[in-house]
Image 1 (cartoon, protein in one colour):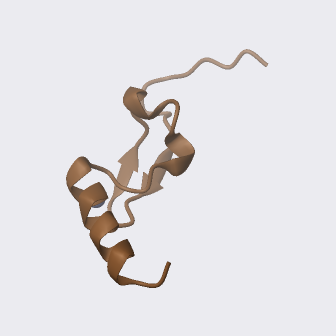
Image 2: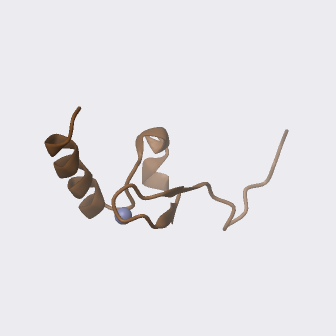
Image 3: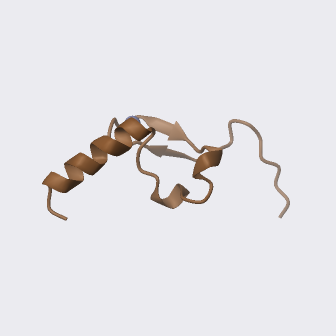
Length: 55
Ligand SMILES: [Zn+2]
């Protein structure tokens, strides 16, 4: 299947930190499955909350 990828047709996720939807970015190409936060800031917030909670 040769499907063209259009702009605006990118996969999206909901940020686990701020709850906002965010779209795939090229820098996440290799780690998209592991991406949970929309930004480094949210990523840091997640790390903090993860530490205080039960692992
Ligand atoms: Zn976020």
